Amino acid sequence: MPKRKSKLTQELLEQYRFLRKVPGNDNAAFCTLCKCEFSVAHGGKADVQSHSKTSKHKRWEQAGSSSVSPFFGQAAAGDEELKRAAQGATIAYHLVRHSHSFRSMDCTAGLTRKFYDQRFTCARTKAEAIVTNVIAPHAMELLQEDTADVTFVSVAADTSKAVKLLPVVIRYFTLTEGMSVKILNFVSLPGETSTLLFNEVERSLSAFGLMDKMIGFCADNTNTNFGGKARRGQNNVFYRLDQATPCSLIGVGCAAHIVHNAVQSAADTLPCDIENFVVKVFGYFHIYTVRTEELKDFCNFVEIEHATLLGTSRTRWLSLSIHSALYLSSELYGSYKTNIIHTCTHLITLLFFYLHTVVKSLLVGFQERHQVDVFKKGVQNFYDCCISYLQEWGSPFIELKCLSWTLLEHAPEWDEVECSLRYVSTKLPQSDISETELFDEVTSVKTYTSEKIEQWNTISTPADERWAEMFTHFKHSHVPFRNIFVICQFAMCLPGTNAPVERIFSIMNNTWTDERNRMGLDTLKALLITRVNFQYSCSEFYTRISDNRSLLKKVHSSMKY
Image (cartoon, rainbow, N blue to C red; front, side):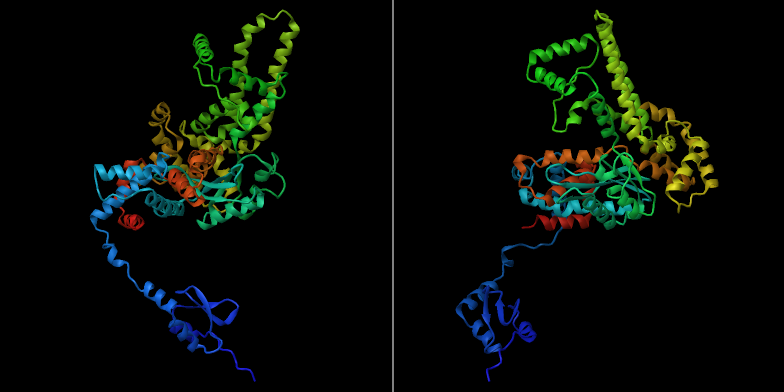
């Protein structure tokens, strides 16, 4: 009978630590020292002993037993090492905050050694390690602590055009910081379907335990996100998120995009080709200094401020309505989302009457009445089309009008608060707001704001800072505010536009340039999280990190060779 083949047993693996199993072959072993495979089928342990006596195995065994510890000093981090770690982390943070490249750290570290400290060694590789392995994870830990105490959050998401990168951004209100907008996740997707977007948003929120706290979703007004202006159908991100959350989710389409598209739709009704006009005007002034100076003289003559003409972009509607976008951005962040439709309508009205004022003198020169009528009809159609588009796509914002009192532009009245209470109760069936206690709290708010409103309005204090200041005062004075704080959190975390996500793309484009195209996605994610989630100045960051010894020890470990 043939001899039975020996196998690599568990006993041999424990006795000879350099052995590993060969997948699919129990009669062979893999030596991790020699990086080779040999048979144990004939003698088992004898085969292993024969292999260990070969010259190749002995040579690698001797090399592996050499210690490198004599070449390095002690790794203990004393006060001097931690101070140097704080300096290195601050320099790395400074690099990210001001959009410098990691390569520039080679020069910066060299100058620092020459000028100040010969032992400073935070160059390119170490700076990247600190940002990726310490600062960005620390920012996410702080975000975890913040969101653990908040009651409500809203989420915003969008994807880039060429490479599908998805930033997931949350917005929430805290007692001390007011309104905060932070990156929750930043990932690459193989496509842009509603299923892919929903799965990633849900996974990001669930990782932080925020699915039950989400009350709003903000994104572009596309069918993938909302299912059209009527928001029908089930194959969209908003519907899927609404089904996955216990609250009745509020869908907030981007108001800036609504105005952009309104202007584009209205421009298409004009008898002239607006797109061609924009391109030609830009080309006429773009590189000609003499023509630009003449334009500045004309602006001074008509008493308007000269602004640099913006060219076309790959997004058609953006190039046709860029001035409206700039105006709206300031309006939205200066006012509040509950007044968005009013603001948009007011904007279109201003454009209409401004156009009427500018061309009024030109109409006098027209000899034929027919030309005047055609012009007026075109302008009127432009205005009507804008208003109609805004009313159709802006209808979801109307229900939020009951929250407009949270702007604190005036002392709130009980009727306003009661109306918002009914609205919040429909969205949060499990809320335990006491109407009796809320009435007393509104009285306290009216008393406090009666002396503050004029001052706040004079210096244009944002609404979230007004509430944060008042709640801090109530907390120190032991004034109850639990119920009104719930309504305030609910209102403040609802966004008006998708601008924070678009800002992330702008930062990404400034960071991920043609000269820095070898940057990995993990490094890019760490840069964006550090840039967006931390709003400290560089000196403030140094002060904060200097008091955190556990974090400095992690920085010290990242700075070691």
